[in-house]
Length: 121
Ligand SMILES: C[S@@+](CC[C@H](N)C(=O)[O-])C[C@H]1O[C@@H](n2cnc3c(N)ncnc32)[C@H](O)[C@@H]1O
Image (cartoon, rainbow, N blue to C red; front, side, top):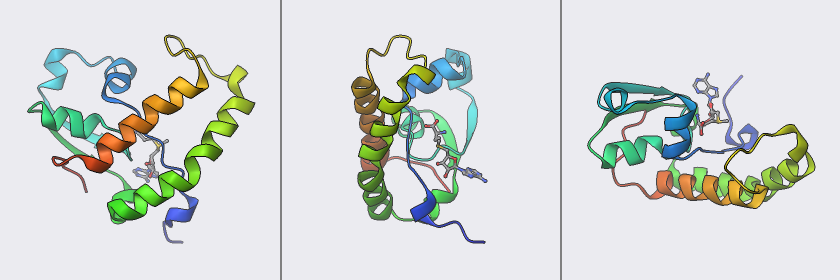
């Protein structure tokens, strides 16, 4: 069975979310990093821009940026709607609302899409 884009819901975390999620120290961030399943997250783009050394792997990189962007546009409002409907299942901590979460994730995905420096395969 093939990996098709119409089955993918692209949703990417920000650099700061990765740092928090994986408890990455300054020392960690200077290491060579392999990002598995990084999708449209902005961690690779931001780290690479700052001189870091990372390669990301994800099956969606088989598709080009125009295709991934189109899929993000198609699915973004659906994801937000589902988050609103299920918001009691999430702990948002510092994030104040589903709308703020959506804005953070969209900004991260745009950084991924428009980055000039991205090491991915
Ligand atoms: C929910 S997204 C998370 C993206 C990113 N890690 C983040 O936290 O923002 C999950 C990602 O896993 C990728 N994925 C699915 N199957 C995979 C596989 N077998 N190997 C590597 N990545 C895979 C998907 O394409 C998708 O981009």
